[in-house]
Every structure is written in C-alpha cells, then in structure tokens.
Image (cartoon, rainbow, N blue to C red; front, side, top):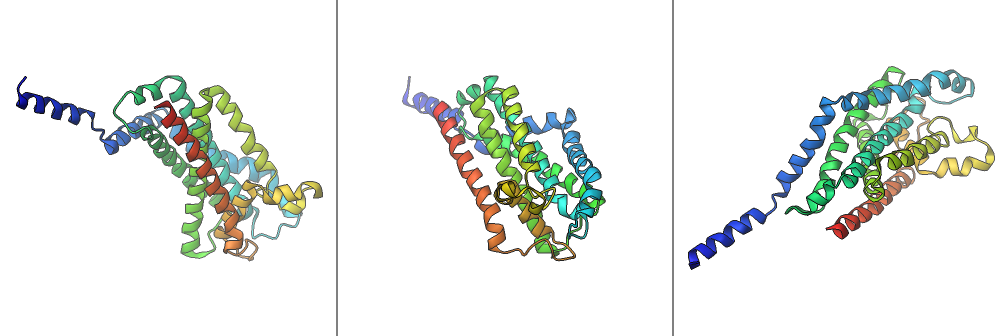
Length: 277
C-alpha cells in the first residue's frame, strides 16, 4: 500500500469515527418526540393536569372555604400542587422510558457507537422537557379556569414558569437516573407512583400547615413539596397579600432542594453511563 493510500485510509477511518454530537442528539430526540405525538402521549400530558385540577378543587374548594383560608380563592392557593403533580407525572414517564432503554439493550447499542455516553441521556431529557412544558401550560390553563391569576407582575410570572420548569427538570433527571439504575419499567413505575402522592397529601399544597396535627406540622412545612409550593405561591402572588414575599429566605429552600436533586442525579447518571461505557 502506498503512502497516499495509507493516508487516505486513515483519513476516512477518522472521519467515520468522529461523532457528530449535535446531530446525534437531534436524531435521538426526534426518535422520542415523534412517536409520543403519534401515539397520543401528548394528549395525556394535556389531560393529566385537568384531572389533577378537578380531583383536588371539586372536593376541597367548599371545605377549605369554611376552614378560613385567607387567600383570594382556593384555586389561587392550590395551583402549585397542580404544577408539581404535572411535573411528577412527566417524571414517572421519564423513568419508564429510561428503564425501557436500559432493559431492551438499546443503551448497550449506543455504547458500541462512536457517541458520547451522555448523548442518549440528553436526548431523553430534551423529550422530557418537551412534554413537561406542554403539561405546565395545560396546568396553568386549567387552574386559570378555577380562579388562578398571576398577581405579581411580569417578572414574577416569568419566575413562576421558570421555577415550575426547573422543578420538573429536576424531577425528570432524578427519574431518569432511577430508571437507568433499576432497569425494570414495571418496578420503576410502581416505585415512583407513591412518593408524589404521599408527599403531595402531606404538604401545604392542598391545605395550610396548621390544618394538620401538631406532631406532623414540622414535616409538612419543611419537606420539599411544601417548599416548592411556597416558592410557586409567592411568585404567583395573591390579591390579599397572603402568598409571601419573594426573597432569599423564602426562595432559598426550594432552590436548594432543586440543586441537590440535580447534583445527586447527575452524579449517578454520569457514573452509570461512563461505567457502562
């Protein structure tokens, strides 16, 4: 083989082995988004917040009105829990998808390709955020119907939407890590259904902390779902001024919980993917 042929062969090999990371991410993201549109999964993302809104508002509106809730409306008070439940619903789907990719051997196929090990994770997260954004828009529309209004100005409105999206992203990243680790779609789904339900009921999302027994009020006030609800409620505002002030004392805990979830989840995702590679 001549020197020219050797050089040409080496160049062609290097070209074939060079991963086009952005193109790979786009192809894998499209692989996840397009089927979800065709199969009606997007419709489910739209209808889920409507179900949460109706199931919370219809039975509790009259009860909380008699309980002396000092908000302009119960719809204004309970909107954060609808946002959080929509985010949790998206996270369960994210975990199921990650576990399915792991157990089907698709992750191993990606490992055999000239691809960065985190590209499949980035593609799954992009599709999760796509569904999350649709769910959040649906949640805002549904809660608007029952009386929710943005009362804090444009900056707080953008902050409300950004915080909801950030919380959902943290949930999805954690769910992706759990799904990749368990490698069982059924077990993963069952594992993630109960925690949002239990934490949602034992939180200030549906009722003020003083409505709970004294022995559980400390947990109710300080657990992450309640902290997320406090932050969203403050950014959403209230005409009676009962939503809380947007300051670091109030916003620090929810942002701290988000940062902790993202850091821990990202650590396990990187460790799992690089170890497998």
